[in-house]
Each structure stands twice: as C-alpha cells, then as structure tokens.
Picture 1 (cartoon, helix red, strand yellow):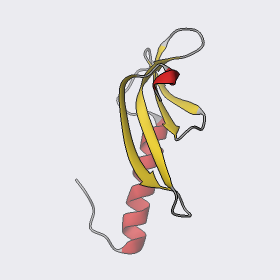
Picture 2 (cartoon, rainbow, N blue to C red; picture 1 turned 90 degrees about the vertical axis):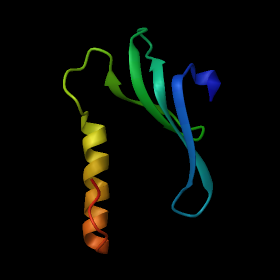
Picture 3 (cartoon, rainbow, N blue to C red; picture 1 turned 120 degrees about the vertical axis):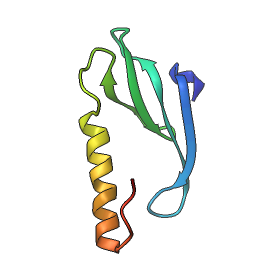
Picture 4 (tube, helix red, strand yellow; picture 1 turned 135 degrees about the vertical axis):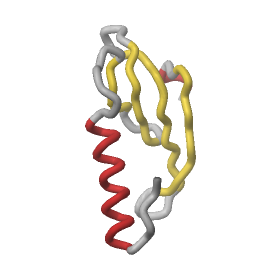
Length: 83
C-alpha cells in the first residue's frame, strides 16, 4: 500500500467474515489538505481517517468504539477480560 503515501505503516493479515484473507493497514498519511493524519485501510478499500494531528485527547471515537466492541465480544463469549 505504499501508493497511499503511508508513513510508519503497520500491516497485518487477517480474514474477513467469509474467510478470505485481507490486509489491514494503519499508519500516518496526509489528507487532501496536507494535514498529517492517522488512518486505517482494509485491503484495497478506502482509507479512513481516525485522528488529525491537531486532535486533543488520548483516544479517538473510532479507537474507543473498537475497544468497546472487543470488550462486548469477550463478555458475550465468556472470555476473560484483557488488561
């Protein structure tokens, strides 16, 4: 995904809901106005911005929602909580 202009990119491979391998990339890139942003992309799909360089606070709504979803999954499946 180097064509997206990523900096500090991190890519992992997982599977989608039908079992096909997909890559998930997170990293820093620039938005159309040139601002440095944190973003996520799944395979060759669109890139979603989840934090602008000027955002205040520790967590973003996207990161919080993802963490809450994993907590709900663990609770519903009886898995022990993580840190």
